[in-house]
Image (cartoon, rainbow, N blue to C red; front, side, top):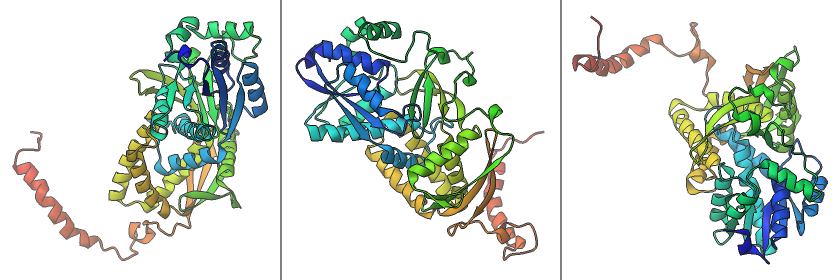
Length: 414
């Protein structure tokens, strides 16, 4: 699709007020396209003045500006990530991937109210976001068209890189924070920040080249450890350090404490993008790292070995589904329903100690569904477990073990 296909029409554009958003909005407006800019309030820690975003987008030529209230939605989505332990290829908590799901859904619902049917975004042709926006729109509103300027040959010919976009904005009197020597780009929401591109594309650039927004690096954290206690009720954090909290506040407080101690700050990952190339990212997610780790400790108490094996498979599946933009499909919804059963059992109080980028287990209490029994686990002469009872069990196990040996399947030395 090309911009000329939409001349005289109105499109809904997902814009954040940054360089790409301002450039695309001005360029489309000059091409005769009416642009309505949609921005989501996702609790971005690096952008608290939404009025400034509105001003920039209107100055760029947007016919209207719509602010989508999404803080509660991003918090609920983040909780699902925590409950499913949906980390992608390591410790990336899918903070940007899940935010795209929240933004796209909210935008589509508002577009339907306004009778708009053309969804547009500023995601590049090399990244994951173009896939996420496309798939989510196709799933939730298959009747919509999706227009991506970064896949428009006319746009690419006019703006082969950031330098041309910066010059274009300056020539049109648009104030953008981007500069030609800006070392990397950042995407932010309540759950965390993603830093990539620029100098971060070189693997000789250390992760700590990034200036943290949500806290500090472990080397700059206090020399005194701090305990963090969270009580979960059926998988939801309802009290932090003894005080009742709603979900958004729980994440905000966890972000503050985690950031203070360098938890989840500067996570380096060279990951596999859905489009088939590898990319390098540096992530900040202090609150999700704390809450997610505490939840993991609670799961250790309530999952037996068969449930644990299934949960781990579901966790990997959900993490991949979020990353690739399949949050709303049947497979993800089926997996989330299974995970919800574990969340119903995840009630308990977990205390950890935060110190210079590390979290240490301190205590677990008030977990009515815990399978852990101190007496049965003890090596002391207490409890009802009789060591001699293992004799018959091991005889049964030994039958198959001996068969492996006598059948020649075990290679024995000498």
